[in-house]
Length: 115
Image (cartoon, rainbow, N blue to C red):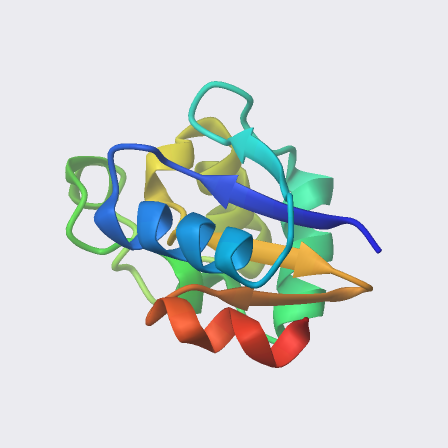
């Protein structure tokens, strides 16, 4: 079973989650999503696997969130997905995906439920 982590090496939670996966015997496929951005379709798949709506994985403290006016609650899910695809810094991290399921590593131990 492939384990994939959407990772930002500058993020302490992302580093902790990667280390936790490795401690549990997994060698995940590491995708640095800031260097290799997810497509809108990829995000839709991840959201389905997470069981979440786009607004739930938006990083509201990012400058792009404010500049793009993403606090506007009238924006559609697709508008938010499009913004995250264009500005991957807006995506909460890390996300671990395996076996058709996904989890956000906040806290890192939360990903253990899908392994």
